[in-house]
Length: 139
Ligand SMILES: Cc1cc2nc3c(=O)[nH]c(=O)nc-3n(C[C@H](O)[C@H](O)[C@H](O)COP(=O)(O)O)c2cc1C
Image (cartoon, rainbow, N blue to C red):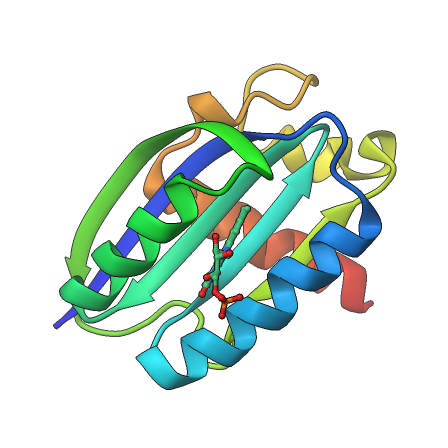
C-alpha cells in the first residue's frame, strides 16, 4: 500500500528562485533514494505538496520538511492509503504559478473563490488541481 499525504504551508516571504531550485534538487535526489514521489505547487505565496511512498518514508521526509525555514505553518490537509500512486513519474515536480490570473479558470474548478485558498482543498482535489495545472503548463 502507498501512503499519500498532502499539506499546505506559507512560503517564506523572502523565498527566492534559487531556494526553489535548491528545494527541488535535494527533493529529487532524496526522494529517488527514499522511494518517494509527488508534486509541489507554489501559488500566490502558498505551497501545496503531495508526498507518496511507504508510510515511514513519508513521515520521515515530512518531519524534515516541517522544520524547514523556507516555509511556515505547515498544515496536513489529508492522508490516505492508496492502491497506487497518483504521480509515479514525478520524483518531485515543481508547479510554480507565476501569474495567478492565468491559473484562475483552473483554480475555480477546485475552490469556490477566485483567490487561491489552498486550505479549502481536500487531498483529492489538491491532486486533481496539480494534474490540471501540470497539463495546462505542458500544452
Ligand atoms: C516546501 C518544501 C518542500 C520540500 N520537499 C522535499 C521533498 O519532497 N523531499 C526532500 O527530501 N526534501 C524536501 N524539502 C527539503 C527538506 O526540508 C530538507 O531541506 C532536505 O530534505 C535536506 O536534505 P539534503 O541535506 O539532502 O539537502 C522540502 C522543503 C520545502 C521548504
